[in-house]
Length: 279
Image 1 (cartoon, rainbow, N blue to C red):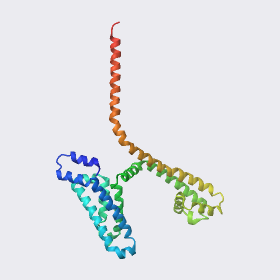
Image 2: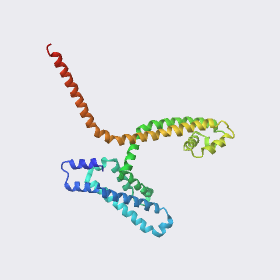
Image 3: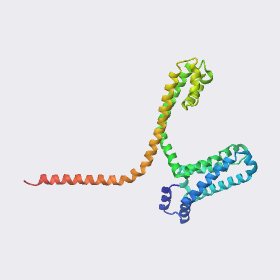
Image 4: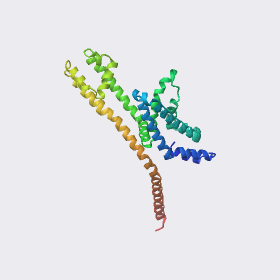
C-alpha cells in the first residue's frame, strides 16, 4: 500500500490499534526490503529449476526454498488483508500481487497444471514493491491513452503497406508476401530491422526498384512512428515527476494570486477616493 493509503487508515475512525500497528509494520522499509530479497531469491530458484541436471541433484532443496518463498508472500498478503480489509482491493498493485500469489496455489495436477508455469510471474512483484519500478509502470499506464492514437496510425500504415507489398511481391515471393497475413508478418520483421537487408537484396534480383518501397517504409515505420512511442512515454514520465512539485507550488501560486487581487482592489479604492475628493 502507498503512504497515502496508510495515512488514510490512520485518520479513519473506528480502526483498531492492532490494525494500525500491523499496517505500519507490513509497509515498513525493513519488511519491504525483506520481501524484495525473497522475490529475488525466488527468481533465482525458478531459473535454476529449469536446469534438469541441477534438479536431479538439488531438486528437493530448490522446491523447498520455492515453497518457503511462497509462504512469505502469503503471509504478506494476509497481513495486508487483515490490516486494510476492503481497502486492500482498491489498489491495482495489491490486486496484481493477490492474483500472482494466488496462481501459485493452483494444484499442480489436472487441467490446472498449465497455470503452474505461471509461477514465474511472482518475479513481476518487483514492479509493485520497488518504488522506482512502480513509477516506470505508472508512467506507461498513464501513457496508454496517448499511445492509442499512435497504435492506430501504425496499424493503418502497416495495413496499407501490407496490401501494397502483396500486390508487388506476392507472385514472385509467396513465402514472404504470398498473402496479407504473410505480408504483415514480414513487414513487422522489417520494422524490427531483423534481416531486412537480406530480404531486400533477394527481392532486388527480380525487382531492382524494391528499395523504393523498403527504405521509405523503414524511415516512416521504424524511425518515425516507433519513436513517437518513446516520446509519449518520456513525456508522461516527466509530467509524473513534476506533478509533486506542481502540487507543492500550487498553494504559493494561489497565495500570490490572492495578494495580487487584493492589491488591485486596494488600487481601485485609492483611485476612487481620489476621484471623489473635492477640488
